[in-house]
Image (cartoon, rainbow, N blue to C red; front, side, top):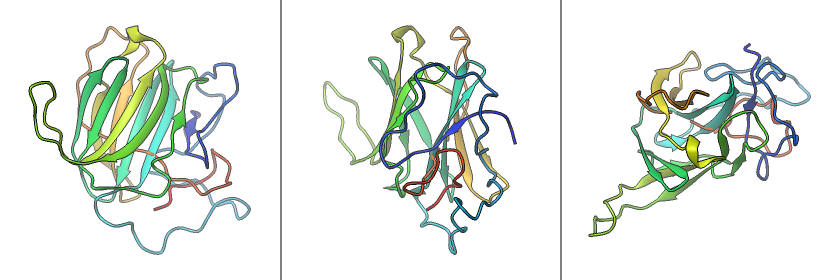
Length: 202
C-alpha cells in the first residue's frame, strides 16, 4: 500500500496535527483497495452494493506537496468544475449523498494547497442574467489556503479492482501546469472509528 495519507470523514470535521505532514509519514486507504481487515476496528464488508446514483465516498490524499481528491460511486457519473472566488465548485451528476459524505473534510494542516472539502445536494436552477443554469446533483466545494493556488484539478476516471467507479481530481504542487483531464470521490466512515483504518461504507 502506498505510503501516503488518505484522510477519511469522521463524526465531525476531520482534523490533524498543527504541523504540515509530508508524504510517506502515514499509511492510509488506497482508492480501489480495501485495507486488511482488523477485527478490532474494521467493519464487515457491506452485504449489498449501495443504490445506483449514490456518492459513496469522498477521499483526500496529500501527495508530493500537492493533493488528490477522489469520488466513488457504483456506476459512472459526470464531473464539471468552475471557480468562484477562492473556491473550486465541483458538480457531480449524482442524485444522492451517501452515508457521511456530507461531512466536511478539514485538510488545512497537511502539506497540500487545499484547506477544506464539503459536499451538498443541490437542485436544478434555470439560467438568469447574472447566474448560469445549474443541473441538479451534488456540489462539492473545495477551498484553497491561498488565492494564488486556486485552479481546476486535473481529472481522470477509472473503474477500480473493488468494482467501483472513481473520478479523481489532482492538484500538483506546481501551480503553473495547466489542468486537463476527467472526473472523481469521498470516503464514508463509520462513526467513532480511526481515520486511517476504515474501508468505505455505503
